[in-house]
Image (cartoon, rainbow, N blue to C red; front, top):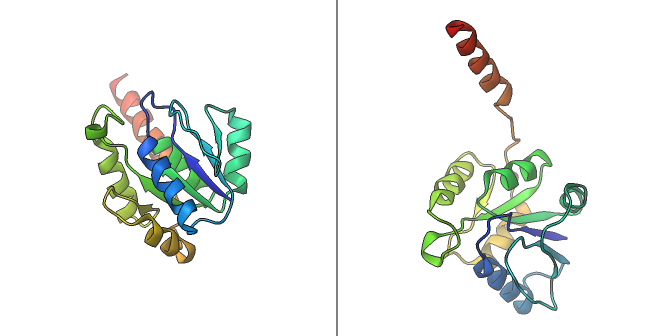
Length: 160
């Protein structure tokens, strides 16, 4: 199963769903596709689409997914990495009114350079990326949260 995550951004990301739908119609996607669409309104006979779903249901879908295709939100990427999933990440772009700025480009570039994800930029061929993801071995994600907390605690202790 392929899970598509559009996050909870209040702007549409129809562009990504159009590309996924195209790959289904071309026969490059044969498995079931489930979409957490957020505020993106989209009708499809080929995909099972939910607006916003509970964390429990989302976690179950993520557990069941073989591949996750997501927008460039840090939360969606990190949660997918924690579940050791193969992830294709497409940044939302300001020029299409998908976000207020293009910060997701930098997020995607950073995770890609570290070997965690396969990026999908607007001029890329999603069909080729779908073939590439099958053999992709993502780098194991290691959180830096504990180190950051220790740094903050040490700083706070030093100013008190």
